[in-house]
Length: 575
Ligand code: ISL
Ligand code: CA
Image (cartoon, rainbow, N blue to C red; front, side, top):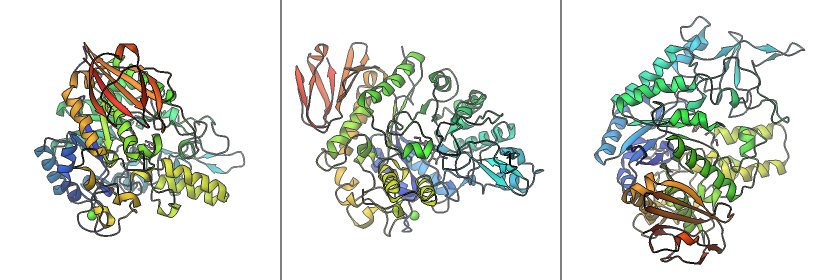
């Protein structure tokens, strides 16, 4: 029998504060804006809100570069606004989890300011400093060939001390040195600070990167066309990762707090199980990125991989989903199930189709695919409305994110042809993080009800048709469909939360079908990923009386050969 837990029965709604709702007319989302939408969020039927960073930050990476963990970015509000938010959520029975970004800080954090000030600083060893290496001709080089996620070397040279510091992301995001116990204690203190304030848990940013191979070996050359290479194999599951996670786990346990760790680039499931096994005292669950990387080119690294096209097949998606669902079941772990977040293209545009005739059914199909899996379901703001990627006509000048802009501008700097740049822009339109960061679409009024002035990032022009106002009271909307998903997960908790997952008709390239089984209850979930009708032969064991729990067309019965309409999906409970 599976271990039950409240966090397994939870559903999470992610808010990206800059793009959610502006309350004071400066074009930037803020905490009071969120306060004004709490009933909307509660109405969806989720019970946890995950708030992306709202801390003091120079905003080089939209708040994932924190300069003070105990204070709020002025643009977003004040500490007392956060207290009010915690109160407002708790009053509605919702919990709040916040982003813990502790692999790195901002270079403007006082720890780093002190660290870079002198080799004798008490904080020198809080970051990762290394001496240069020298090429045969005597030119100074970084300590190794690691690539930063935002392009270029992962090392930045400091003339004054003649040393380099490590930054796996922007050079304004120096990596903390977790080998130093004072760093670990400082992180623990930050956690206690927020838990004591009433926060219910954390989403932990790139938490698997905190332990590095301290030999800092050169990475193998995977992509010979570039100088720097992914060093992920030396930091994605470093030697002391689980020791550090248990340090965090102790505090989480003390407060009964929720935890989800972001863990990209982990190849080995046994490492994951160590992090999320029920009795391990590390994390509740983690995000993996195998689905998100289905359409990345695997022979390149980071942005180059993201912006090189790759066509994927439905059976590849099935293999990934089945792998994660199965090994969690076998090993007493738990999944975090998601298709979108603030770093990804919109799922309806990327994994289905956002063309007007099918967009609504396609978004509901993806909600079905996702929402009935085993795991805690995460929905990113706007996903509940079927919001889409940036318009195809957008030029690069409308993009705002450091990751996409660094990559594109890097190609411009090396004189790439217009043809190459256009191809990259097409891939950006599918996969750039910017796609998720346009202002939330509240209503059909100017600036989509997000703000009274022109927002910091342009709105998607489709907002007059696609907005919350037009969906909340429409029973046929994507929003109403998500409400049903969450309601059904509560109503049929045994089978839909705790039931065992298995693929059905695993080799079918058009239809993703799976079942959930708990004792004698069984739910069959069928989703078509095709934009035209497909015939699907119902496996004999399902040709039995049952109950249609949810459908994105109007199907009532199933039997024999079913013709699934474009992006049709349904959930059928066998009696
Ligand atoms: O999307 C990714 C893999 O498909 C990666 O971008 C990965 O998730 C990401 O680089 C790690 O992201 C997190 O840390 C970054 C920050 O920019 C992202 O917004 C955050 O989610 C650095 O803090
Ligand atoms: Ca504002």
